[in-house]
Image (tube, rainbow, N blue to C red; front, side, top):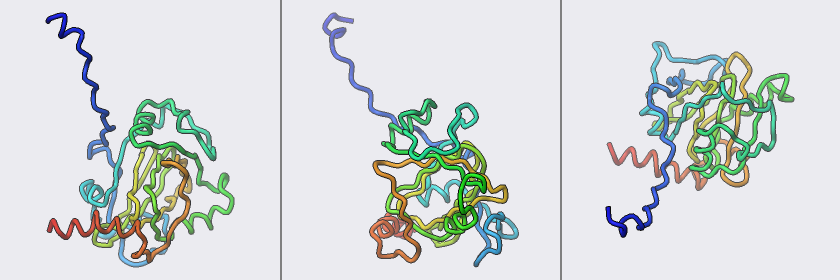
Amino acid sequence: MSEEAKTEPEAKKPKMSVEQSPDEEWPEAWYMVEGDVEDQKKENRQEPNKAATVEDLRKMGIQYWKMDAEKYEYPIKAVPWDPKDAVDPRLTAIRDDRGYSYADIITIHPDHLPGFEEKVKAFFEEHIHDAEEIRYILDGSGFFDVRDTDDKWVRIHVKKGDLMTLPEGIYHRFTCDEKDYIHAMRLFIGQPVWTPFNRPQEDHPSRKAYVEKFIEEKKEDN
């Protein structure tokens, strides 16, 4: 190699995003029974069970990373919690890649959440947000229900180590499962967005954007 070649500056490597987890690591998901459910904390599967595939979830705009929640400790509650304090290299890589600048940590359990039953019922109201929703399950488990592109309910059973994002504008709801315990980190880009917009929200800009990107696009593909 010539001296001239040696002195040339190295080309900057492009910034690489953190790859999502392979299909076999994603949480189990299934289509729910039709109509209202008697107990939101039960699995409420169809009979026979109708699984929702990872491809189904991806088509809704859901993203997922499997994390090592066993190796790192987090407080029971921290509002806020600075994501710069993360020591998990995978979490810090996702934080930096996706621009998460605010976080908090909450525990949904009768001993740690005042008005537990009322809060869990409120979480189960169908709604959208005007920002992406990011949840990292540090311990425990629960259900995220999301509407698919045909407006059917899909139930996703999130557990310890699951980090999942729901796209802005998707209709969804959350509940504990029968264990009544989930310890979770909520991440945000910029200032946190707490406001749920309960259905119907067809004229909301976030809902319109979601429909255009994920539902109308599906119709065009078909």
